[in-house]
Length: 209
Image (tube, rainbow, N blue to C red; front, side):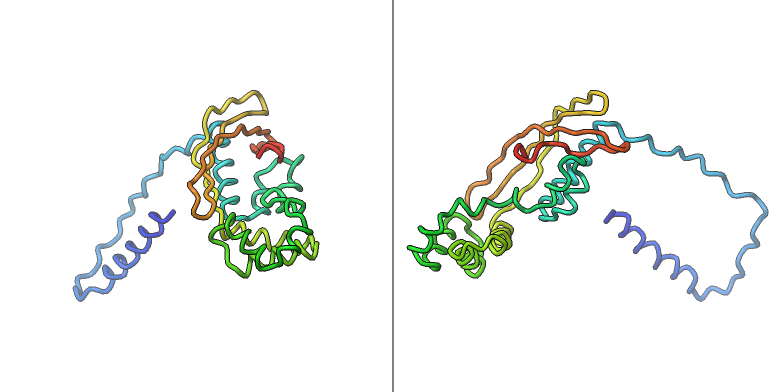
């Protein structure tokens, strides 16, 4: 797409310059010859394998952008509502016992969180600590998602071993996850797909993603 846009930018000035020259020679009289008819063939339809790779790639890009609504667009109907939730991207609040956090104090607890979520701002970490101590679930989810966004990146590396069986398919998705200054971790996980209304959708159970 970028290459096409650059091409348009370069062609337009060339056409303008061609019409602004000082040469007063009259233009040639157009002939009556008919313009040649385009015989370019339409591009062949994408194979199932290419469609599956495409939908998983787009879903991976949406995940990288933390756009859960867009992730849901590439998810099958069975799990679409769950895909819109942020819960799968953050640890449950019960991971951090409120009593232990309170005994440490909000700032000390935020500092401890900072050792796990390197790269997150002090303000975001403190918001998580306050939410845990106050047992505010809504505030915890919003603040922790902010911390995760700041400290973690997820990148789809490849989609391999695609096997299509009628309207279902499986594939191996390799993802690289980076948390703060820690060494990137790459793992390969199975993905399940189904064809719905003629389009392939990711139907991997959320617990396996």
